[in-house]
Length: 244
Image (tube, rainbow, N blue to C red):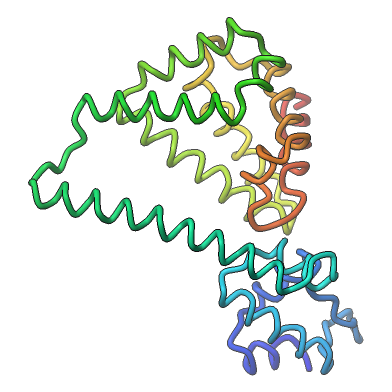
């Protein structure tokens, strides 16, 4: 079957099939003119992937299952635990939002916002404090925390939306190695960092952080969300950004 026939049979888009192929989930044969040809084994694999995606499993996790580096039962059990944790988090958010609406308190108070910033600093300290201090020093980290403490609600909203945009750009750029979108992600990332770093973002500091994203799995998972290897792709683009 050609790709058009497969899309009609499965309801998938041709782009989805190509993304799955780029992610290492599919490897159809190539016929004349290098057109993709999907056999019975490919179709069975496609429907299996669709069943796992319907459960909201990520592409990297599905690849682990397909390559048998992780058995399906343990992968699904881990995913179920993540969903349960997310359900608890959402339940708490729903309760808080419901209470806020019932009280008519639609805006975050200044006191709540200050508490939120303190909580985020504490969470970052617990997750990454030791590593970033070893890399950048106590003075730099303390100055960065102080700058974050002065951030306004508008600045925090911009930072959160911008980081999401960075990750989305990388996930769009990675499968087709789109250097234009990747370079835009790097530019935005440099601007995003300036909201946290007390000094101007130097090439050396930016490149060092990019390497940390690759070396530390806690940072890596922020970028290898949909595709394995995005962290390395991002690092390489940051490295080359300063060579232009």
